[in-house]
Image (cartoon, rainbow, N blue to C red; front, side, top):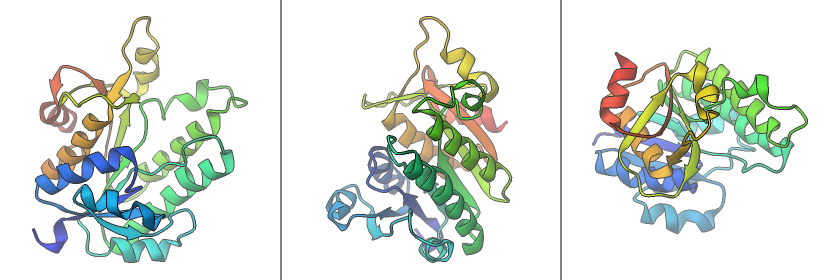
Length: 232
C-alpha cells in the first residue's frame, strides 16, 4: 500500500500492539511501532511492524508529530502499567494528550485510543484514595481531550483483558451504562486482547465507528457487524 496507509502504534511492544500489528499488515497496512527500549525491536519486527525508538513519556509534541508525518492513522496502545500515580499521569494522560495534539499537527486525522470500558463512569464511583483512581482519572481526562479534538477518533473500551484466543465476536455496551452492566451479578466482563487487536484493525480497515466510543466485551456478534451497528 501507499505511504498514506501507514499506521503508527504507540506502545508498540505491548500485548495488544503485538497482536494488532500482524492483523493490520494482513489487512494491507504498513505498521510503525513506537517503543522506548531498543531491545524490544526483535519482537516488534517478528510481529510484522517496523520498530521506531521514541520514549513518549519524554517526547515533545513536535517529536511525535515527526514520527506520525504521512501516516494514515495513529493507535494509542501504551500504558504505564499502574503502581506509580505520577507515571500513570505522565503516560496515560499527558503523553496521550501530546500524541493527539501531535496527530493534529502532523495532519493525521484518524486516531484510535485503547481505553477501558468504564472510563466515562469510574471517575464518579471509584474511591479517590484507591490505587486504581489515578489510572481512572488519567484515562478519563485523556478520552475527554480526544472527544474535544478535531480528530476522527475511535475510543475503544474493552473489559477485563485476557490472553484467550480471540473469538472474533463481541458485545457492544452503552458507554453510559457500561459500569452498571459489568457490575451485574454473574456478568462476564472478559475481553480477549486478540479481539481488541481485531477491533483496532476493523475500525481502520472499514472506516467504522468514527467519532464514537465503542465499549465492548467478548460476545456473540461478529466484530465487523458490531462496529457497523455502532456507526449506523
